[in-house]
Image (cartoon, rainbow, N blue to C red):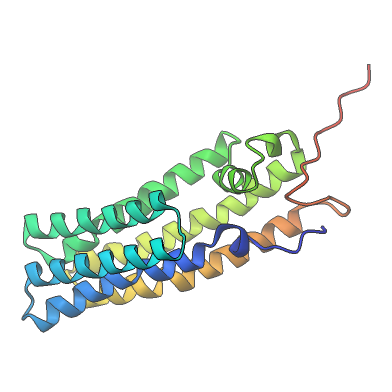
Length: 214
C-alpha cells in the first residue's frame, strides 16, 4: 500500500469523540453539585453542548455534524427531565450503540459494509470501492471492529444503567468514547492493511475486478 493517511486522519473520529465526552461529564458534575438535581444537571449539559457546538463551528467543522451532536444532548436531557431519573440521560447512548451494532453487522452481511461507505464518501469515490473485491473484503473485516466497539459499550453501559449508577455511567461514557474510538480506528486500519493483498494501490485507488475471459 502506498497511501500515508490513516483512518483517524481521514475520518477525524477522535476529535469528535473527545468533544462528545464534555456534556455527559458536565451533566454528572452538575447533578452532583446540585444535590442530585436532574434539572441542574440537564441545564449544565445543554450549556456545555452549546459551548462545544460554537467551538466546533468556529473551527470549521461541518454544521450538520455539529447540530447532530447538539440534538443528541438535547434529547438525552429531555428524556432525563421527563422521567426524573438521572441515569436516563445515558439511555439514548445505550440504545444508539445497540442499534449501531445491529446496523453495522447487517451492512456487512448484505455486502455493503458501512466502513466502506463512510470512507468512500470521504474520498469522493461513491461506491466505486465495491467493484474492487479486495477492498470490499477489507472494509467488511474492518467493519467488524466497529461492531465490537458498539457491543463493548452496550456490555458496560447496560448493567450500570440497570443499577442506576450515574457517576459510573459518566465515567464509562468518557472512558469508552475517545479512547475506544481511537483504538477502533487504529484496529480497523490495521485489519484493512492486513486484508489488502501485496501491491494493492490502496484506499484511494479501487482496482475493479477483471472481467472473465470469453
